[in-house]
Image 1 (cartoon, one colour):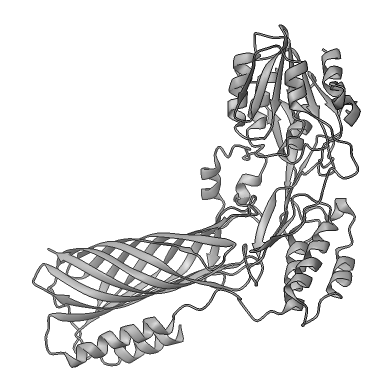
Image 2: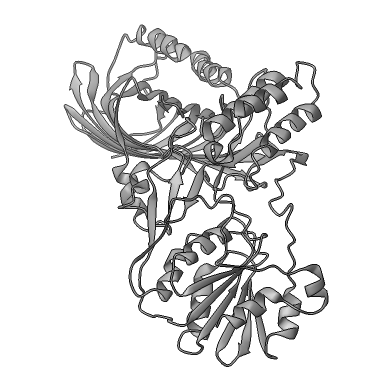
Length: 267
Length: 331
């Protein structure tokens, strides 16, 4: 985290000529893929943290007007953590984000809401996870977002552009399994419980707890550069740092440093 | 171009600086710390400390004294294995990549004698069917016998009983002997075919925190009448090798008036187990849930039959299944 902050400060300090290279109003569709070096903590399954690489896929749709900018973003990360001969873990992380920002000077500042999910499945040949075959963190996040586009210092070619995106949640609705069990707490109430798991979806939705930033954090920082091939196409490289975590007796978190390639169509 | 290279270098350096580490070991835990990690996990999660009357602190004192910083993996594994065995729970496991700890033998001290071939050859009419985990056939025109070898595909068993028993025979013998468990989730629905009103058939308890007595309130479950109804006699045969989901079924059936449990006390096994990976990669798994009957008694130590009877080795050798014969007498 310190590395990222330092890097952002370094680059922020060199924003001499901030501008939007591609005009005032536009729509943009982007696709990206990359690899994330990921640190996963799931204290329901182990102490400490595990490291793995996640495949990151993303799709974003942006509507930018003169003073407002809205982005709908879907991302999906997954892979097997094969660190042990005995037990693997499959991580699946789908996120959906709606981000709306207004222009303040040369900066875009706004708010976002997000559904961020981490699914963690132990895959074992010893059949020891009968009562905890899945752990999950499903969070609805509300928070603030920031973006700034800038010309790359020292590069004269204005076809190149740099940008910083940052988001941090302030208020969250977080759903986690009950202690020692994959079912949510709501489902363990006699009024809702069924042995065949009928109605568990509703219980999952109702089992969340409001969490402020001291109990749950969701942080997302992107540092990107891109090159405009022409007025309609751009490709670029994005360094993305993601952190999602909750503090409790059975802590869970996922942080990843991902390097993604992004292709954009602008119209 | 030179400046672009600098930018790409910055990306690469930041990315590479967060490169992965080896997953094992997670930390530099030695044998003493690993035993403590194991002991604390069991202490915080095992549900049956109150019922088993085991002093887990004493288990720590005895077994941790066998471990020091120079202990070998075998010694550490053995200390953990002994600790788990002291809980006498067949749902507790300890696994390393190259070995598996001994499980608690819940049939120890019991004579368990059953031979399905004897039943097929000596008691059933000529035509018997074996499908998946189920062997069934008629004892006579009014009595259907079904042996269930594993608690799997219970929905299919329900369908099979609807097809073969309901409206066709007066007596049903469900033989669970030798069935060590599986999945009990569909059993309450199946029992709906044998009740005419909503009946409480027991309750689940789940661990709700690290304290030994931290469990949820009982989560009662019910058999709800379905669209069909069998009102004949139902005999359930059980023996000590019936474990886990099979004990669940025995306990649920015991709550119903038209069911008779015949045979030996079951092996118990009321817990559902949850796994945990120790910092050296070994996996320990302990019971974190329980099932209690309507009087509040856990099935962990076994479900007692309504009528106690056992086969001896000599009975089987003589071609006689006294448990089944008792069921036939009780029709």
